[in-house]
Length: 216
Image 1 (cartoon, rainbow, N blue to C red):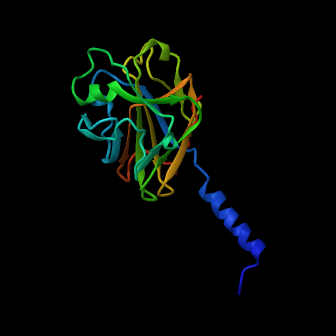
Image 2 (cartoon, rainbow, N blue to C red; image 1 turned 30 degrees about the horizontal axis):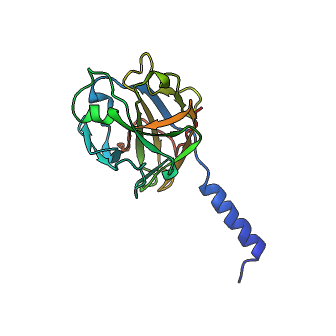
Image 3 (tube, rainbow, N blue to C red; image 1 turned 180 degrees about the vertical axis):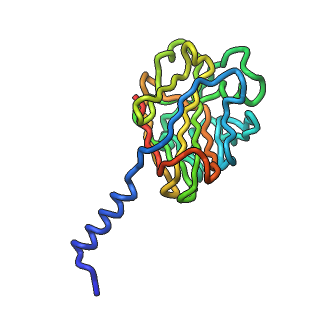
């Protein structure tokens, strides 16, 4: 028996409304990076990690995607915006040499606004950690911020106490293969140096379904 058009349409609408819902029950952590690569998280098992170049920091191998913003089968940053531009700003001289210093030295930037990021190829029910690294060691960026959806967790690219940049981390349990979240930025520019996604142990310290970023 065929389903009446109005009922079928309503069912489809409900399905897409449900699939578009983003949970906000996420454990957020925002911390200044340090001179040491130990700022790069190594919890659980690496799923994927991306940066401007092929850099290894604290044992984490970041795959380089060049000057174009991240747009891979695993992760899309800033909706693969064509407006994203590559930049370079040297971290403090005492930053650990090698891959970590390179990671902090090279970034992407674009005009600040609400921008989406997609984390893909997740397994429903598994726990994950996403870490976003941002560093632009220039005085004009001292008041630029990113704020997590909890409205409390705030990070900076530079400034007193944030000289090496920031780490913004979300821990969650995936409720879909692709999780999308939106970041808005305070200041004139978005900045990102790297992103990694790690699978956490089943008994890891997280208890959420997805995540949604809002930065001001």
